[in-house]
Image (cartoon, rainbow, N blue to C red; front, side, top):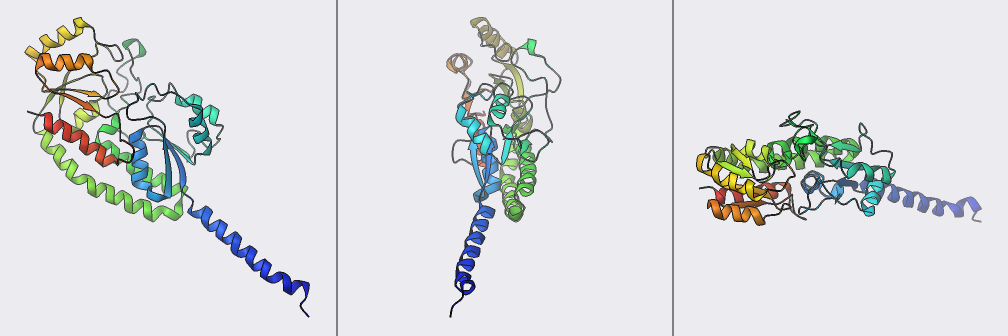
Length: 302
């Protein structure tokens, strides 16, 4: 005669199998990562692969200083296992309010879930400016991701942080980091060739210092008279005169800045205008974004 204990044994086994399968799925669930900028999101995907699910807050066509803090962003931050931000006060106008609204106690500086990508970066222009000089950053220029060398520094730290949060995926993260570094070598070689050209450039905004430093370019001036101040007709006349004494080979500007006046200026100076994407487009890797940026400069170079 089958006892109650015997009859319940298959149910007990089934329950154990179910609980084990739930635990396995939970262990394999991707980390929920929120990145403030497209390039940071691309780097997280490059290192994390299928072990991460990435939400990017700013779009490539959006000025990262002035992102609209939508309520849906707070919801994503509430669910996040990791926040990856640019730092150096780039997001100071919109990110703090989103973090407060998210009510995620893990997203506090110093916690593993809070990753400031600027830590470890060789910061340019630190302590050189104050708010009275326009839209500037006293902590230093925050637009470091246009320099592949700095991007690789971020990638190495990201691999470490992801491994800390998901140690069972450490081998995956290490392998993907090694692949990224290896794939970057041809781009670094192309950068060395560009440096030999010693290009002089006009920049629309004081945001391309890292790119210029990496590629050995000299910035003759900015189209803006001060950061964040649109150029006046008088300013354009000044730049035309400057070209006579200190000629630039091209004008560089990000896609999220207005280009009507810079196109007129480029025509007047008879030099190309190179419009740079504000970051990796959806589905684009970080190296693909950097390659496209480099190619646009190589094609414009005399």
